[in-house]
Picture (cartoon, rainbow, N blue to C red):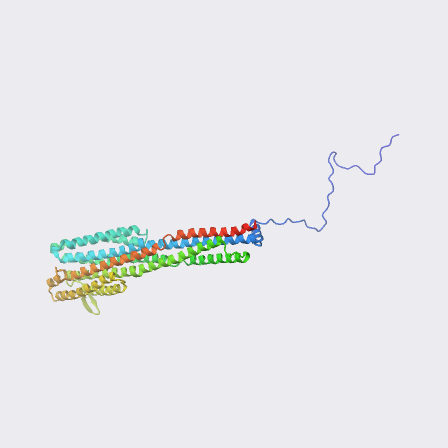
Length: 475
């Protein structure tokens, strides 16, 4: 008889064919799951590697080499930037702002001289000589050409552009008034004098003030260019000194650790940096000296001479117009009436005298002093002859007064022409001195930005090579 097998354990429950899952070890109660450590950033890892490298001598040498190269390159870059700006400003002084300032003064002078020539021709009546007419036409052409040059260099929308446009509008109006005055004067109509006085009023109250504004604006531009060209490049100098000090410290450190007196790479870097720094200091000092000389012995003298020449032109114009007006224009000063043109003549001649005195003081050689002294002598004779002509006019002797003003010999016109000629000679001399000094100043910085940049690159390469030679000993 067969009996079924006995078993103490029941078969596993569940679907047939599904394997059993082994029991999992349980986490003790109250214990938190483990949190993975946060991942470090690339920057933090880089800082850590750098800190670790800095604790070894090769790591320190690499850092020192990088810092030295960076300092030398930064010195070269800042030097190139600052000297480049100053060199460009010095070039603007020589080729842009000062010529434009003189051009603006030339516009003023040409307008004032045209007004004087017109009044001189009017006094001659129907016998106006060709020289007076040609002088007037030449002055008008010169003023027009100067306005074209000024317009080409004016910034769009600037005050100078508006002033030039105004002068371009007023110039044809003035010419029309002068032509009418001439026409009526030749026909013997007294209204010609009224037209001439009206033209003079337009010139004195509208055109010359506008030309003076243009002159002042160009002088401000000149001062700005000087202000940008003259300052020392202190940032570049300080960075150069710091780079040299760092190179010296690196060589001393290397000597103390190796007992080697000279590292060729660092010595070459120090030499290149020292040459660049010396070139910077000496070159800029020479440039500054030249620019200072061009300003003190050129620009200042030219400004005084231009003002003196303009004063002489205005004085001559008022002298002529006093005979044209014949007392029709008066001014009251301190309760006393004066002929308006004679009164303005006295003011202008006083300005001329002060200007000539200042010009003589500023002149630094015989070439500048001689024409100014000659102009002073001419002015003294002019004042004497003018006093005689005024006395004749005030006594009713008009023809005698006219002869003493525009006559062929012994007239005040001869004195005015001599003053104007001598002032023109003095201006030419001072202009030449300005160009020479400004050119010397600009040339002192020629090649400095590029040369210092090249030396800085060589210095940085020398510093890296010197540190690299020391590093090769650890391999």
